Image 1 (spheres, rainbow, N blue to C red):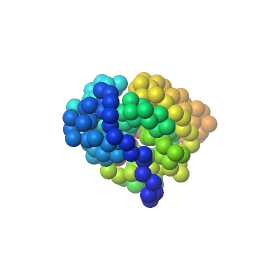
Image 2 (image 1 turned 120 degrees about the vertical axis):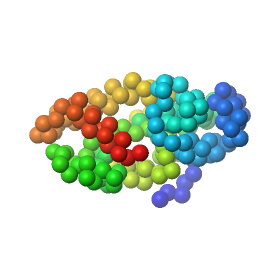
Image 3 (image 1 turned 90 degrees about the vertical axis):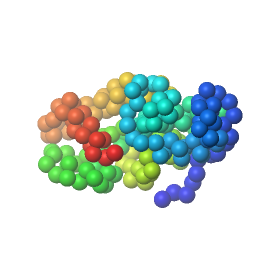
Length: 190
């Protein structure tokens, strides 16, 4: 478990700072903790990150996009929004142990969004810091913009999955079936 904390600063200006301040949250670290405790769930409009607060739910994508916007509007451009692909399995998500038992594969490349600051990764998806489990399983990561967490992220993820399937033709599973299995893994995990 790392004991590095993400940078802290007061929420001074901008639309998203105002939304947090209206909830009594006045610093970035408070905002991170608040978002971390919001229940997991997809928001109704993928690129309207205010909905994380008003609908009281969010995914790794929407929660971290919200925090990235919050950091940017407060001049903290060194906080990066990252899309990372890691190999999801029973080690990264122990609840999936039974899921993989009858599969021709033992992991699925999954895309996860998180923040990076000073070469450290921070996951505020849920109270459980999954970065502890997935960090060693990351196979690709890149900086993205908040508006890219919707359709663009899905296209990038499915492109990676198709290339992974092409390299592992012995698995004999379609991209569509693998995507459905991935959706089931997410459902079981949160």
